[in-house]
Length: 609
Image (cartoon, rainbow, N blue to C red):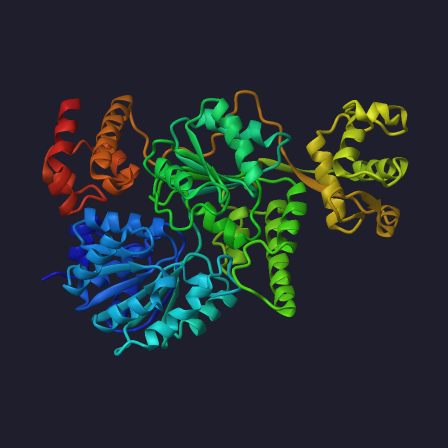
């Protein structure tokens, strides 16, 4: 008779549960609601998929994105578990066929978009089903305190209340502050749930904050030193996405891009190319990623910082989901603060109509979250510790030795003299110009316009020529942030001197900024090693296994990682299993995958030996 252990082994290829999984499964099986906060990559899906196999009725999984549904259903079917999804990507014929199969009881798990729950057709279907469990993925979407609010999530409790028999409700999210958790409890009407937070730490991830004069050059160098790796480069605006994409494409990197300005077909193709490793690098706005289940992402680079720590940690958490070492690097520029504030003021991501009072409250919440993000970029303390404390968790040590702060990649630089020079430059030029002009003036950059206006002969021109222009701009932004300078609104904002600035300097205050240490000659920007080191012979076997996986995935029309993850292939390449029994000792290979692919894998291994 099947039980949680036999399903874990036969369907997923694992012999033990990860932290929190077993107790969550036990509570669901005992009929208790659950609120689980588990970091990305902690294995949330197993927590509801295994109960789905054991409970008598159907499990509904409320999921926010079509891509997530397709990937998870594809993975379930590869593991021998019958599942389906209902969303707008299906043709009318496909939708009708899925409904017929559901009514005949052919599926144990059905994925559905929250917007579809309250439609007449779905309510009629649900009334005739025996629903044992409703699993709510990305449950933070129910809360306006969260970072991906979806008003359709607030109707989930209405759907559950309308069923003839109330099923168990299990809510899952990767990032949730106390306010978000309180909203999830209330708005999903969870009934005395078992609550668990398994810990936000992702020990396999390296966290870095980098201030660099040229972010594009940094990315190009990083990609050159990490060839063959799959990763996501996030940018705040479509314009930046297209700029980064053009530079990297011209440099010959296998890259695609994704943003809301592309057509549906263009976005679908970009996502498909990335997931299938046709183009293993993608540059995207934060419109990309939620629900992407690709486990072998080896780096996340943020060209701009996100608007909140919740968004940042969710996006960074898409790296290393298979447990392998991965890099999460944020390229910080103080100029991004101005862009972030512009986006907040202009209602970015407002998913609902708000009255004036509610809109102001929403803006304040976003400014508070932005302050947390800025503090993360500026801190000289352990970055991992900062993240954990933000989410209400105490770090085990003060230094993780796996972030840019702990590794001493940065140092504080006193820029008080630059503050004085900036004040003088704004005064000399008559408080008529913006940050870029003042930075160029102090750096001594004559772009023709400077000389034509006579400023190349003014006092202070080139005074800070030894400093990078980007650092001068960072100091200007820091001064604006602290109220020492005033930036006007409008299309062409100009800088003015605040009365606070003279008091600040007269009081003997010193301003410091965090800057990257000069890199020693020959030192690589590569931050972390592969989890499993392999010999040249094992590397060759690994590449053959990857080719087999790629070809098989193409034939079956699924992403490569649905067949096997990179970590599973590395373990095969390192252990050289020569029979079915030893192959099934490899993590990630259950009975179904051994039956489907075992003979081919063993033959590849034997051919290399």
